[in-house]
Image (cartoon, rainbow, N blue to C red; front, side, top):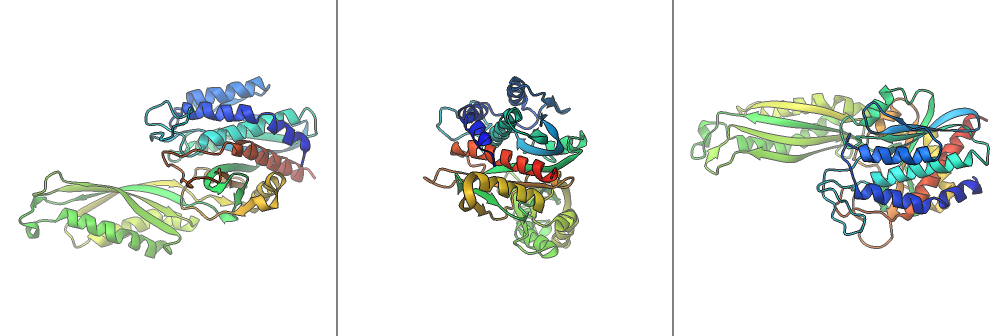
Length: 395
């Protein structure tokens, strides 16, 4: 679209890589991203911008105001890290025990920062109608996530579209993955508590064999939920933690099971909690066990708006060419970006981060890292897409 923008992003690539490595070395958990927020704000202020801290105390929003009237296009990055160890051996590996940027949020932050800085510089040499709003969202790895606070504070008022990129280590650097419609799933979590009289393992017939009941729940519950909500392709229920008892000769009186329930369909998500409770009740009805469920709804699915997705596609084609734009499969993962799509047109794409060599590690892997060439590519894709949106809405 503009050779000036390409030049402006390229001139900042070295700085953006260094900024990403700084965040990678000093990761912060959800709603504790104080140093991260300060680093972003400081750099934006140096550029003459006026970032505004969120009421949460971390995360910020910053407007890059163009030089002509026009709409608002928002670019979103998430800034928090995961509670896990960094298994890499790079010089910029995490220096915080048990905390790591293993999902690429450090790269997302550098990408949106880079797009914002380049667009700010562009306003001095070209006509840029409207405003680009930079959103640096805290707490994406938490439920319901910092996106809810951003919406509640009114930062989407007047916004025409929200755009974002997410690192994808399955896609090669230089490629951008797009998908129309549902891109991710809704994700809920819950804890089941089962209780019985307890007893001696020599006489299981005289009590409730609670561990057997738990095993039955683990085996049957996912299928029960899928049958009531949809196909196995649309619903994934997995138990991630199970605990009962401490001795081999004691039938425990209590056990707990924790699971996640993921739905690709928005309507199924609305029914998920009720269906989960019905399924559990049906399984334990004649066992003699007492069952309780503590259910926590998470986030809805990310469903890409067609116009917002078109902006990303046009921006991506400008940067990586038609061959670099690939179709990406739907993921059963979840992202708080979905909340933006409940309010305004929103879309996000997958940013290829694989170098082309070595294994294609998944997100949240302890040795997750990226080919840092993706940062400049991502910054330009978002900047180009934002300009397309601004100019579309003013013509």
